[in-house]
Image (cartoon, rainbow, N blue to C red; front, side, top):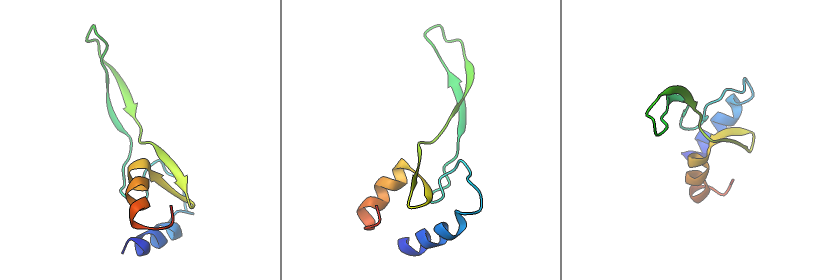
Length: 72
């Protein structure tokens, strides 16, 4: 099942380089920087994305797939 998913994602990955994990769909979220004075400013929290085998993956998916497949 995982190999089918990877092959499907590899086929779709050539279309556009978006900033989201192609396996789990993790994207950037918004939050606040909160220093000791409790002043808040908006910030964007981005996932740690790496390109492996031509697929854009978050590091959590890389760690998960590393034990289940021999690709990584």
